[in-house]
Image (cartoon, rainbow over all chains, first blue to last red; front, top):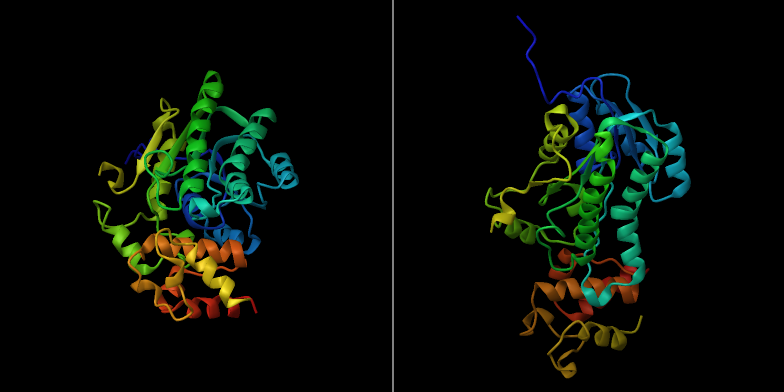
Length: 251
Length: 77
């Protein structure tokens, strides 16, 4: 029987996944490996990164522990990288705070990780010619800050809005080399980011009912969208925002 | 930690309720102004003024302002 064609295949593609030690980044790494990609995963926590690494199907994967908001770590990572076909940025934090409590330190903490680290990584990848022609960059943004927000979520929203704006400008800058830049914009995904107890289970259940599809997303459901944007199936897609939110922003 | 100061800080999380209504024994969830936003305000206040992380669940389990004070005190060691 002839082999089935698969436009979403990542076979032969070398892909960097940041924030791979947990949550959405971890799921993206695992699913991309299943699609045949050769992965370089990075994250801040060595033990958890190792867990992700062990869960990757196939061989030829690499793991590099790095805190991308630390300039020395960023340099080390860049030096260690081979030329890439894809890069997925996931590192992110959420710090819900009502406006009256927001201090400059909070603004900088959230922006350092959610936005500035991502801007600088992209800049270094371009400067050091680590992106092959026709490479694909995918940023994990959010519906928050682009289509909606939440109480106490102004910093998170602002940082994600910044990511979306950056993706559009970068898409234009890199278009002449056929390099594409897109974002995925998830609604609430069931990850540890929301399991820290600041929000009660009742509040989560109530929030879930506001999703037309009546549940939160699964990390792998974001990964599938990322696979599309990394693959040749999306070769004519750049500067776009792919909303994955169970219908939340329809209302 | 000083409970008088804590009560003042607690009161600052509210906009309309008179300061005199806030005592150590006040059952704060019975105040007219209480809502889920106030929980976020108290979490923010404890984090910024007392460098202490309290959760929505802990606030829900507390009844009086003294309960929240004791919670923050115990976390402060």
